Length: 318
Image 1 (cartoon, rainbow, N blue to C red):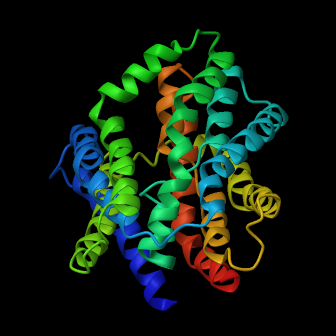
Image 2: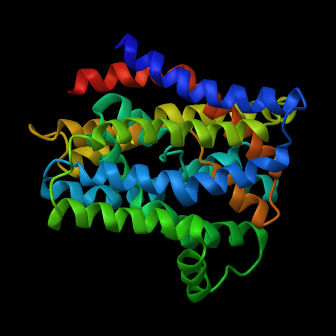
């Protein structure tokens, strides 16, 4: 357990702090953050994803429902976020940012997948990746539709969304990695044991690179203005969402004997902080950028401290 906690905190906090200090010291510019993020998305993350899926143990039929589980949780948190935003009496722009932050969580390599990897190894990384298959389609469809409701703008057409996903290497390569990894698993040869070390290196390296990139652009000044909303978001992300997630896990049959790994991954992903894509959507629709940044930053920093608790709870589930 101590090794799991140490590895998690070292990679996540180390990458974030290294990026932040690199900018504050003047050694690196925040302008490098998008390029580091893009390079990791285009090259390193796809390699880590394909390797993890290639080495996946033969999945049960319930594994195929992980993306649906993730989608249902996003839909379930939508009205929760909308209702709480009204109770907080946020203006229309801030409501949009708050709802996006509630719906979309950091289930990818920067937290959810990495925590699943720390807990369950390649199996956890593979299951965590399968869980996230519905994430980007939801961001580019439901996320844009919901954001447009608060911005009074028309979301892009479905054709434009699909074209962007297929053309942009940042979204295309990770999706291709999923396809390649699954093909290697089901119709290719068994993954050579020599690939285990490469997998063990690329997953933490991807996480550290993403967090370093985020640290470069991290601004702490916006938090003071939005303490009430940030405190409320903590309740939604780390109490309400895991509770709803466990209820869904029961409905999906993940609490039955033999599904411990699926249950652990679902719990980890349901207890994740706000996703960086919530900031991207808020920026695209001219919603409160300061609130979006504050919600992302505070919940992700708290998630680092909560990682040992989440790992401990998942051990009890195993």
